[in-house]
Length: 275
Image (tube, rainbow, N blue to C red; front, top):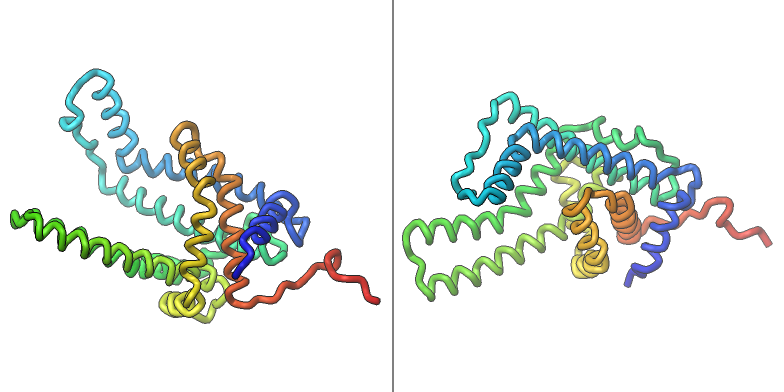
């Protein structure tokens, strides 16, 4: 049984003092990451027309108009292409920061530029995210298709709804299972440059064998932070993420090292003095 408390304590130490490498500035890098991705998301929202649409909806609600009659703004093809590119940039930066936290958790000297290491092999990183996303979402997608077909054919009866509900629960459970099965794939990608996208998924499946419930409990231990962070993001801006993001990801990185049996290598300051 992994001691979650010790992992979290070490994560706090890494954030505040660099952990085993006092030169690391994890909190500063986290602030830069959150600020940059925040403005990138705002830009993406404007490009795709969502910002204008949300403004029109609020205006309609305030003036007592029918919100269903509010049209979605017309968006040019160029704007959609730029939206996709910005979204891809956000995804790649998200992967890069995970690699940064993995190195920082191991006491490796890391700099801001290391977040961009993921761009050295972008196709591999993109393929991993696409394949993992498709595999995880396929079961819930099947449930959505079944409901759509039943509704279209007008077969909404109590027995059919009960059967379909049971199938939906099973399919969602399968999706959650696959989510945890491939949870460590990104860390594997940084650790095993010799593996392709599918190889990273297979290795993650091997690592997570018998550990899915344990990781689920670790996720639940962060639920309070997640709720507070989401509330703060809704009311103000995602500024609490500058603490919550590294706190969670550093803990997950250490948990990953525990699963793969990576030995703890003390620094000179931590090493015991010779007798």
